[in-house]
Length: 356
Ligand SMILES: NC(=O)c1ccc[n+]([C@@H]2O[C@H](COP(=O)([O-])OP(=O)(O)OC[C@H]3O[C@@H](n4cnc5c(N)ncnc54)[C@H](O)[C@@H]3O)[C@@H](O)[C@H]2O)c1
Image (spheres, protein in one colour):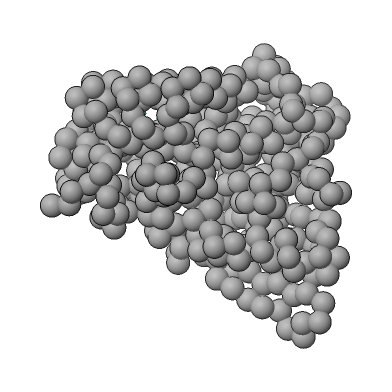
């Protein structure tokens, strides 16, 4: 039996949670000691599969009984502030929250307030930062040091801006050395209030132009009809970037590798980037890094400020759609405007359907 420094509780035993739990077998100083789900069958099956000692139906009871150091909130993004505040009140040191960390403007403000008041580490599960070519700086180094002045990026994903958008903006910021956009102009339409999309509430079709420092333009496309990665079927497998610089170009996909070529290179250099190769290890390294952050070894790559910057960049695009013009950061989008935008999109959608 391993003697772990950090005892973890997992909230939400759905499909995504399997990846959170499975990597614990490879992390010596962390142990998953309990899981919690409202659905008994899910919870018990999960407990058995991963050999988790305790199972609970109620989150607050679980926190009180288990007194974990770490919580993984692997739920739909409905009550993030509540999940984090309960954890902080129970003395939890770090909470890993699945993406998206928030969907409405006020939610990020609430999380910020809780984080500052209680000191709990809030870490957003954009684990791709821990895929080796991204974590060790290979891609960032190519972008920053080999392409010359990077003046244009095209980034596209087939999930909406709250489902795949957080991953895509997160990696973009990592590659740009945590640069944040100065302004954005966006258009978008269609709201779907069912199933997965009802939780990941964002225009289903969003095309944004971001202005980053040093005259860098980014065309950012989150749309089921966007240019995807050839040969990929699931919507979450589509994510790719094209970086153009004064001295070269980098093309990166989630699953079909990357290549770059700069002045003076006769042939492009190719590298691996796939989910199949890096997904499991990336989640393990992401999780192990939570313990490292708590031990003061190094800050987590997905710490709260990073997730907050990603969210603010994404929600600013929705403000631009709402206002019909380019907006400058910091955004001033409110929950009321967010709701009006949604209602308007639903009305527009219904009108289009009626006229067909
Ligand atoms: N990072 C990634 O690569 C990645 C990949 C897939 C999904 N996700 C994200 O993971 C999240 C979860 O996805 P999923 O498909 O596993 O969701 P899901 O809805 O299938 O599972 C969530 C589970 O949480 C339980 N739950 C919710 N609130 C609870 C509460 N208060 N108390 C106890 N149990 C509660 C539900 O009963 C459910 O079983 C989503 O936000 C999704 O965007 C991330």
